[in-house]
Structures are given as structure tokens and as C-alpha cells.
Length: 251
Image (tube, rainbow, N blue to C red; front, side, top):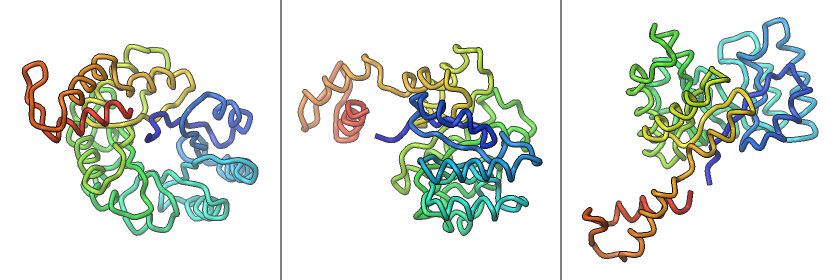
């Protein structure tokens, strides 16, 4: 099943790499971008390269057009590591990599979501709400301004057969209720995972994207009704409903 928990760890903190792997996150992302100060970029790249020489991880490189992009891209190519490309806007850039999560976090990237999703090397779209909020001049914790952007990523992913996209981070590390609400909203919008910035977020995120027992019970009733058109609890059941029920039980 597609991964639901993606944990960032600063690329200049090799003491945390093993802890991140042990956290139980589906995917560990060694971060060379936002988590690393400019003066530490080269050191972080060396630390990430040393880790990748022995073990596996995904790497968030610095954005295209930055002074560090070429060296970061060369590292992941040499190590054969999957990559998160931030500020994803250009299909040609994504096509240079073997396996890419395209982090869409600009207005231009949102408008090109369909093109980005269609790049053969792209395995998932992810949403960068914090950066997009800065560009749009809105509060990152308010979901309403991002409804259009989230829907664009969900539809673009489905159109080319990608797994549902990965939602952006919840920056408050102490408010579990906020995290749970963010996950519920993302799932309701059609997302299938979330970027995490601390190991304590993983369990709540994983639980939030798992089908509830009520959903599983509904799915079992639907499948028990058979393949032909019928009703369950007063609602019509046909092929699309059966498909949804199967997905719930596979989750």
C-alpha cells in the first residue's frame, strides 16, 4: 500500500538519521533544503552522502535555480536515491531523476500539477502549504485558501494513476488535536499521506489515514451485497461503490 508517513530529518544532523529510521516512518527524508542553513549545505550533503553509501533514504534536495541544486542532484544520481524536488514547476527538471516526489509549493507548480504528475519518474505529488501560503499572502494554518490547490493535486494524481498525494506539514509539534484535524481534512480532500517534522507525529498521522472501523463495516456490507446493483442501508450500490469498498478493505 502507498506510504502515509514521510518524516523529514535535517541533513546536517547525522545523529538523528538512525533515530528517524527507527521511528517507524514509512519514508525517511534526509533534508538538504529548508532544515539546513546555507553555511552548512556542503557539510549536510557530505553527511547524507555518507549515509547513502551504507543505507537507504529519500533526499530532499535544494530547489532548481539555487547554488546547491547541481551538487545535490549529482549526489542522488550517484547514490541512486529517490528524491524530493522542492518548488516543483518544470517537468523537464523532474525527468532528470530516476524516482521523484514532486513537492508542489508554488502557484506555478499548482497550475502545472497535471504536467508534473505525468512525468514518468514522478511517483507521488506532495503539497507544500507553508511556502505557498507565503506566496499567496495567507495564513498557512487556514485550510480554506488551499482547497483549490489541494484538489488540483488530487485530480492530477488520479488522472495519471499515481497514489493519492501527500499533504504538507503541521508545524505545531505540541497540538495533537490540530494534527488530527489536519489529517482528517487532508483525507477528506483525497490525500493519502502527510509530511511529518517530528517522530511524535507519525502514529497520529498513520492512524488518521487508516480506514475507521465504521468504514470497514460499511465496506464489508457492500461487498457482501454482491456484484449486481443493489442497496445497502438504503443507499444504491453499483460498480463505483464496490470499487471504493474494496479500497477501504485493502487500506
